[in-house]
Length: 343
Image (cartoon, rainbow, N blue to C red; front, side, top):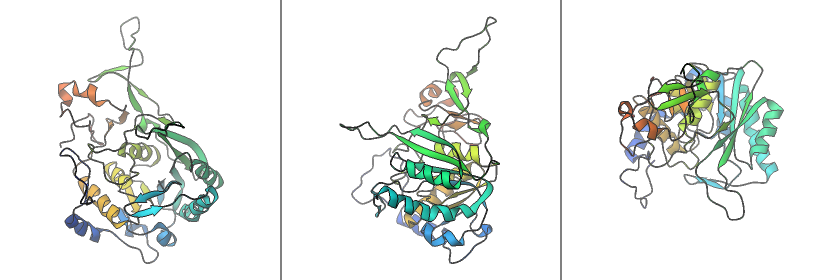
């Protein structure tokens, strides 16, 4: 997005923005619905409209994975448009007004993930328990967060996981986490005991839990960062998409924001549909999708595994992974080894 005139960015700030020329170039790529459509008409496209305006026109049973990151029950401004905090009951009514109609878009084997903070989490749980089969609540840690003098610092968010039926896709092997082993023991014959020697030291691939502490919220030096106030990490979406959608499956995000879900779906070989009411965010999503044509990197993911947060310092210590000291470690989603993101 084009930053306000009073913003002066540091030379090494890599935040993605839009020039007016880019905005005018990406606007024609957006679509607007005026009636019912078939899936082919919206496949791999960004719909630039309010969700409630297009709910009745979306095709039925085309979605393998529904990712929902709606406004939390907070007063928050999104590029000039403000969502105001409501009473819990009112927020629940608003949530149900669009959530229930969305269910018709789901295949019988579909999965649903819904983001929430601690205020809205109860509403989300109640809604999923009413209409879906709740599988888990993921809690992920944001390292960002304002300190509080009279309360605990708020630095976690929830993601509720539900399915339409008991027949659903979940690929646990696609979302294992590679951890560094602090005490790499060997057996009596000197063989590694439940760990592997790698160029970055002793590591172990562990099954994913529902507590995620390996996330890095996008910030100014990361090439995926935008000015969207609630942008989710590409790594977070990669975990969800790899676990809960088949190759070439369809991912729907009705609150697309700056495009992270569609971008990650494209990088990982899935089809996507994004809906976003703000035209600037839609254009920013299209810019990111265009960049994804030549850059398939997802920070923190390589060789079929996810890496712990702050794995970059260890990786930089080996010549194979040499990169500028101020550049976060980048991984090609299709590659076997990490690299510096330049290719």
